[in-house]
Length: 116
Image (cartoon, rainbow, N blue to C red; front, side):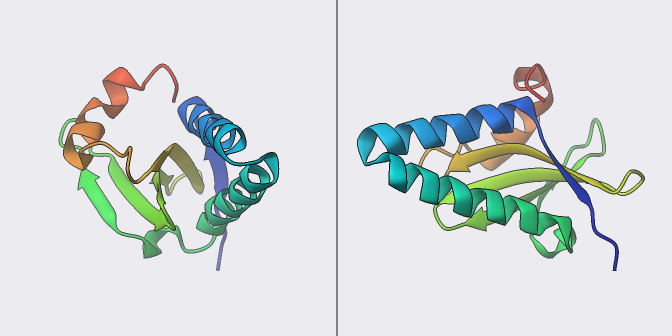
């Protein structure tokens, strides 16, 4: 079975940095490192069988398919490119901060496009 290359969008990198900083400031640097490591492992796991997680929506305008991997209290939003065998992590959000899914996906290309 082939594996996929996993890439982080700039917006996802920004999300991960915010998660790390929040945990480090609110709790401890050790907790931030531990949580960051677990999130990165969850992201890396998408390289194998990325279709196993649910499809959130299909963008009618671009025909993009967006997936979500709910990991502990975080949602990892991603898309799969079958031609290049790549996974693009679009966003990593705390579930308490996660926006309305349909609104998020509609706004993703326009609002977050500069980060992706």
